[in-house]
Length: 465
Image (tube, rainbow, N blue to C red; front, side):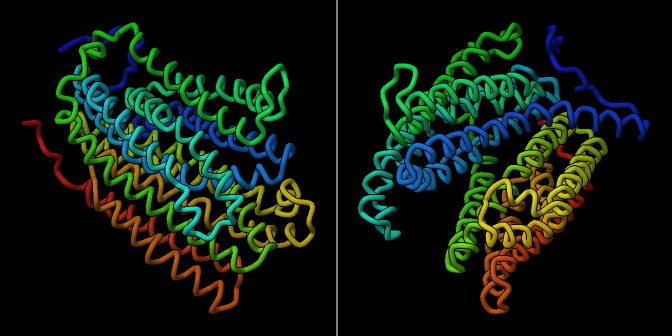
């Protein structure tokens, strides 16, 4: 067996049987992995917020065009990221069994897949004008949103190349490079965004198109930077990172299979929440604004859950890779409980000071009142929504594919949408009924996924062939 070189993350060997030590170790590793991922995920949101602020201050019409253009692009991007999740899982399995060449082989097999996927989804993002027409958008919005969507589409392959490299590094328990690159990208984004939108710093004045070009340029810069980082790792030979990509389609089969299930899960969840957004629109301008603000806050806090869930998947995957069932179960339960506790703590400020939080997003008294009434539900929604994400990632870490996806689909398609509609329109609860629907669905999801993890983690693990 090859000995890890300097810079390798330790803690891959079978662990001692002291429960307290194991819990401390898992908590320490969970937060060590999660914090950089959380910062990176929040960095992605901040870039979007900066786009909104700069374009919104330049031209309200341009902001409307950009928001419409982003809708299909983000849905496709989220699906693509889900389809690449298998990279992180398969890498962590290989690391768990100390097969470092196999870990590098996952990356070499899946990078061409990420490129292919990027250009395929980019082609779909390029041709979204039919979607704007079918959904009844005004001709002016359709025209400008189509142009902006095509600029964004140019960055799709880069976004997935970056994701493939970032997932590989996270599977190695080395998420720090992704965090650093995201922080640097935010600095560049602020400079380019302001310059290209407003024509500052000697740059052309492009308006909303400037923000779209900034997004694509930065995605390519991040892709090349992360690709170079992976190829130039000091211990690249240990992983065989420069051994070529021959036979990549066949070798990526297992990672692709895991990604199909994850991509379907994320795609269905995105579609379900899009339906809830349409319900909010039917309730009127104030309801739609309150819903949008509350969902923005929920999305921001959800980045913490995503970081912890990603770390949970890696920790479970490494234990699974070395066939340590007890440690795998412990990693999953610690990840789930920790995520729910953290999310509950994060909900407390918005619960106790809802008016103050709402006032940060709007000066409209009706919108503030409506948003405040929704924020008091967050101590229920934050922990359950975050918990279901941790649970599904724990299951992904064990190699589970379609069972978590089906549970996810049931919770958000067959529970959330009907419950939200019934409570909002039939029972007359309005926009609060939509969030009660989200709360019910999240509770069903976290319960079902936790039960499934208990079943899976109680089984004997298959031996290596």
